[in-house]
Image 1: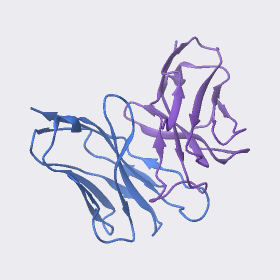
Image 2: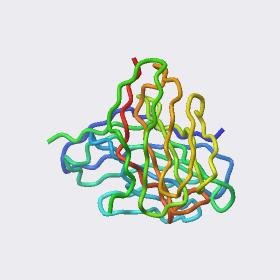
Image 3: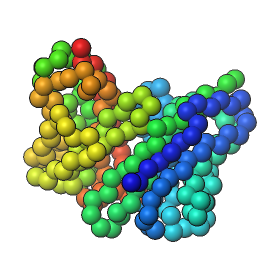
Image 4: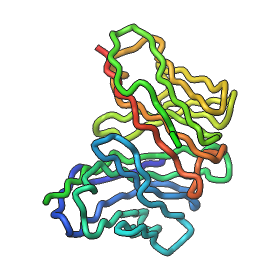
Length: 117
Length: 117
């Protein structure tokens, strides 16, 4: 079975500091895509960053970056210079089956991040 | 530029009642899907569609029906609501009819919070 595990149900960080959220996944596929979604209290799901499994270079989007370790099946999210607006639930997700049949996104259970002033 | 619109935002039902959660997108997306979000469970796929007239089951389809008569709309029907269906429901769409991918990520609606008493 394909699964996503986020081992930290809750985390907190001081404003302006750096925090890393962990994510591991399990799949027998070689080609897949990984995502981090943010869900603020408004409930909206927002795509934060994405990574193609065949690319060794880690993706970055402004203050957000990932540490993708394919052999370890690990996909952690680093948030630099944390801001109060980063307070949210963060979901790790991945998809296989791209280019073939319909692909469906598999989500982890989420990590609740609180940024403290 | 509405994106994915879900109505209603909140709903309370009694056990056994029926209702339809509406989802519409104005981006000409082929792929549409419904997820439910429960505390500690992440998001789980209910049903999805890769185009008008085509639907398929996801991970947790029991108790829900869908149809896709137009590209824009993908309603989710609860025929006989049960307390176990108390959840937050998200509709999501993607341009790529094969599912979604790195270049065609999911766009989410703002969710419907459903309570069944």
